[in-house]
Each structure stands twice: as C-alpha cells, then as structure tokens.
Length: 346
Image 1 (cartoon, rainbow, N blue to C red):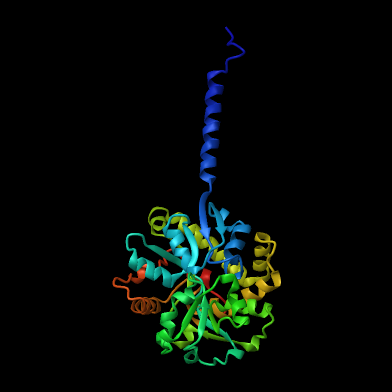
Image 2: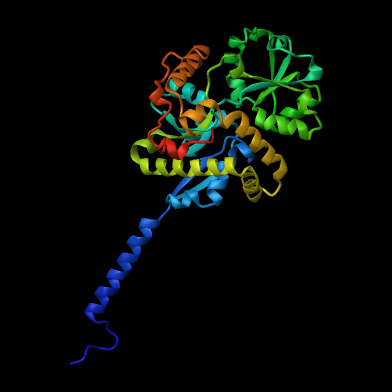
C-alpha cells in the first residue's frame, strides 16, 4: 500500500531534519561576536586604524562584529569599559594604571600598544612669550577634564620642576580648546599635538609660531594609548581578544602604509571629515608617536618591560597610589603575533 501523498516519507523527513541541523550549526559557526568599541575621541586620524579595520572587513574575518563609537577623551575610555557599556577601546595606559590601582576588583588591561611615544604635551603660541615650561607659572592652561595630558600634568610639573600651585587650569570643551588659545583666553593648552597642531593650522596659525612641550622630552617615561579590553574577556574569551588584536594590527599597519586610505576611511564614517587634514594628522602621528627606535626594535604593539615598570612607579608616585598594579596587571602581550609579523622599516 502506497503512503498517503500528504505525508512525507520517514527517510525524507530525517534527511530534511539533518540538513536543517547542519545549516543551523554552520550559521552558528560563522556567527559574529558583537563587540562595542569606544574610540578615544572624535573620528580623526588617531582612530582611523580601527575604522579602516572595520571597513575592510578585518574584524569580520576574525568572527567579530565591531561597532566603533566616538569617544569623550582617552581617560574616559577606561570608565566606559569598566562601566560595562563597552568591552574594548583605544585608551590611555596611564589612566589605566590609576584605575586598576583604585579598583583592583574591576581591572582592565592593554593588549596592544599604539602610542609608543606619548602625545602628551603643553602647547602654546610664540606670541605668549612662553619659551620654557618654567614660564607657565602664573599662566592659564586650558584643558578638558577627561584629557590625559591634563590628568598626567603632575608628572610633567614634577619633571620640569614647576610650581603647580602657580598655574591655573581652565576646564574647556575639547572642540573649543585650540580656538581659546588663538583668541588669547588661555596662555597654553594641554593636549595631543597630533590633534592640536592641524587644528591650529586650520585656524590660521603658522607652524613656526607653535611651541610644543612634550612630557617625554622632560624625562617622563610614559607610554600612552593602546587597545584596552576587560580582564573578563581575556580570561573567558581569549579568542575574541586575539581577533581584536590581529584585526587592529592590520588596521594600524594599513594606515601606516597608506595614510590617505586611513583618512578616506574616516570620510566614509563621517561625511564632514576633511581628508587632507586627516591625512596630514595621520602622517604626524606616524612620525611622532607610532614609529620610534623602540618600535623598530620590538615591533608594533609591544612595550619594554623595564620602561613600563618605571612608568607605573612614576604614575603611582605622582597620583599617590597606595597599591599600584604590577606590569602584568596593566599590559598583556600574550596576544601579539611574532616579531617578524609586527616589524616596521628600520
């Protein structure tokens, strides 16, 4: 007796179920892990490597669906991640040191260093008459409260032997910082030269009229921004961390190789981006923050253990941290590729 036309044969039903199960498993295998990523600031050259990595599919190739959001300052990256609204970001290691010391039960870690030379500086104009850091005494410095250059100013003041009590800080909006300097409302600003310099040029200031006092030039042994993730992710999802590191490295390397492509990626993210300005900013970053003698020796993404330990000591002393974290509680280099894959031209 033939089976009813409206009832599937048992073998067909089994094969159909098997096919559906296989399709479900294949979809799960290719499912992308969503990661919310916070930039250090507005979309500009400093964040271009992550934007470029997202647009070129580098994160996707690692099984990650990464959303890159604009930030509120390098220091704010830590609190954003610690608060749970983000799992990764491009933040300041010195703020990370302070946070981990004060919150040992909620530590974050950097897994890829980008700003080998910290872009922390005091910037002024020739017309101010300030030719040395000592002449900042009695003057007003403008800085946003979440800016790392402001947060780390005590280190610079100590290294340059400044009387901090003789310096007045004005809390300024980040987007008004350079304008206030040009208008003479402050005598100097604390900030990142890669961001400030192009903005000052855009405001009509001649580059020869800009003076920059880098903290590092006065013996402050700090590192600066890099890729930061939660300790929970490192412990529970190391494959996600590995994917973030690998894709971010590819984005950074691509930005170094082609600064124009990095700037154009920003334009795709924000139609108001000035491509020429961001390409110039990217080249400034490469020459002044990214490629140093240490990077030529140790490769992109790494840190020197002795220098990191010294920087932790300096930050701990300046910020009066009773329980500073150990270097391995601040930076984890286990996710870096081999040196040959991270090397740069000598």
